[in-house]
Amino acid sequence: DIVMTQTPLSSPVTLGQPASISCRSSQSLVHSDGNTYLSWLQLRPGQPPRLLIYKVSNRFSGVPDRFSGSGAGTDFTLKINRVEAEDVGVYYCMQATQSWTFGQGTKVEIK
Amino acid sequence: EVQLVESGGGLVKPGGSLRLSCAASGFTFSGFSMSWVRQAPGKGLEWVSSISSSSSYIYYADSVRGRSTISRDNAKSSLYLQMDSLRAEDTAIYYCARVGSSNWDYFDSWGQGTLVTVSS
Image (cartoon, rainbow over the protein chains, first blue to last red):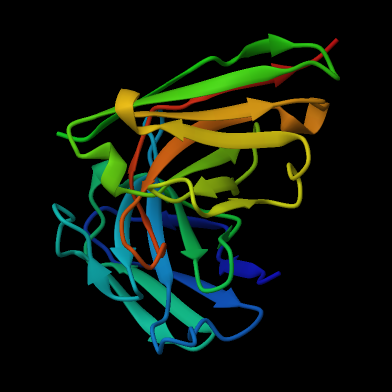
């Protein structure tokens, strides 16, 4: 099984400042079809998960452009350009290259 | 607007059974693969099971394989998860999620979830 490891597990951020979350996979996420199936989801209190980014860097419909994804192979990053109060929540990376597995989650909170 | 509404959760004793349902609306249900994902209390997300649009392909996590059965009724735009031989570690919020692409690579819409509690 592919294990996904996120760091940090908690990220206190000042409003308006950037935040960055790292996600590392135990093996390459490059699929045999050449694509890399890494997505990012946001889980806000009392709400269902919300897709933010798919295939490493593609922003899903309606997602603000302050969210961006990057990376390749086994190392990936989610960046929030300027954190807003509504961004508080837990962020998960998910790989779909081989079955589906999630990272442990990173809690983003306001300082 | 895509809507997914789960139901069927509740309190069940270890060894018992539950059938979860997910009612879909706002899109052509028969055109999408679907999945179940759960979140145990204080834990992260865990993929449980997935089913293709025509039920031709079905996948299970090792943690539920042999104890759970995923199914769907396209005529009713509904997804199901039959859970048997339930254990305490199955306690979780169960989310229904739409698979957003033919490559099965992301879940683009989620329901609010239904809580399953396994306890004596």
